[in-house]
Length: 333
Length: 302
Image 1 (cartoon, rainbow over the protein chains, first blue to last red):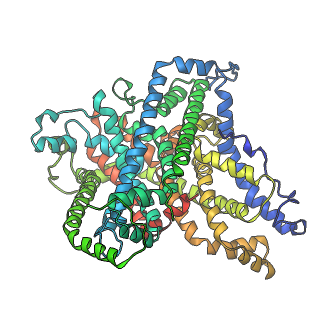
Image 2: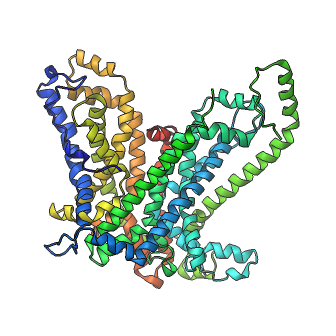
Image 3: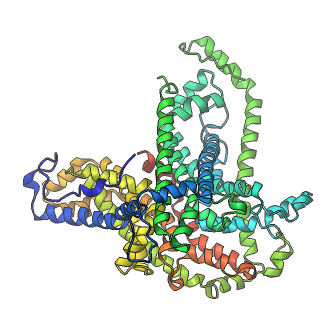
């Protein structure tokens, strides 16, 4: 687990005798002023506004601070004990974990299939190429990524609207009368899948573009060789594409997981109250309410630490799985 | 359809004929696979575009028309909803706040980020590794953990509920990403260039501004676009740190607009506000689309 107290080793501009390309005779006014402005100023700002809040949060999580009183009592791990007995919070943790398990695999799976189709999914003879008009699909799929997440949420809130939404409108139009006033976001059974779909809708395009770029970096000869060896499309995707771009997939998986564990914006727009029977309540939402509505900053900070730990665990699992499977899927060349 | 035994043997003439033979028999297969692929991608494109088109259509309808049917066309095409959203709902002032904050933060983070990335890529000094990990932590730690203390840090500086406070916070949180991306870029620029500049008598300042920065333009452009989209869409930071309605940015203004009036929301104006929010990012995307596609992978390659 990485710790955030690393930055205490603040680089001093003047004491760099050990550096390789940076010898004592280089230290004139020009260089020193350059390093002072170029390194010290940004890093100080970064430490004040990013690093120090993280460290403070870890300390606050061990206190009973309300945020509005001048005093706070150090109460050790009491907040954490309380968290694990807090049913609402545990529900939020399980919802967040569900999102982190489902969203990356669905989003990246579909994105990978689409990326494969538009890059190497073309006819099995002639040059290796994608489908016709593939760039059109690529540009359209990317659209949602440039829409602010909160706006995506608002659009879909309207799409899902029981009476005026286009979804129920379409379902009624094809004769499914049971959806006359079906509240997609108001039913325990459909609330979570409906929210998940919106997040997938918003992000497939971005990862698709990412994978397309990665696949285009693969030399065409490798695909030609696979074809000559008699590998079909599916086999090529599993045995050639995925092993070669696995670094990109791993990075994407971690990005997507971090996003799924946050999910605050989508929830704020679609299910600001936590959904029916808290079925879509996530950690970030609960943290925000606890801190800014209930004024329990110490307790909220503990939730933040739990969220950070869950995020780190997620990244660790992805790295481990990638390493464990890495050996045998390597392309033998 | 295809055999799974991978032919590791060399390409003898016999195998060539086999390949040729499959080529012709597979044409129907190609058509089927191609057809299915096209249908899947087309269906997805429709799913993407339909809600957007519907939003635009609805932005021209009044509340009665919206409640009547989701498909009906507006009785008359007017920009009344847009005017309402712009003035009554305050989207206009949110819009200008957003412009100030996003461009301020963009300039700040690009300046700081490129400077740090350059120094890290070119010099080695004690603590450079620690700095690298501090950046990594800032990139992976959930912003949510920092949000509570950040509130008080800003309060301490008297920057809470000010646009400048937002600018500096936005910039600080975009900074690690910017450094990471540009670090790789500056690293790839050859050292011999800066050495040549030094031999020609250029100091560190001149080397950076007149030699390295112009060379890094493609990388800078890509990061700037990605940052622009990211900052424009920022939601959590303003919601927590900027509670003065006069200083709202677009995203939080939208959230307030949608929730404030409950059932009496002017839906037409809401749809119009959505369109207004999306258009600028859309334009940036369409203009720089090619630039973005090419280099998106660069940033994530490590």
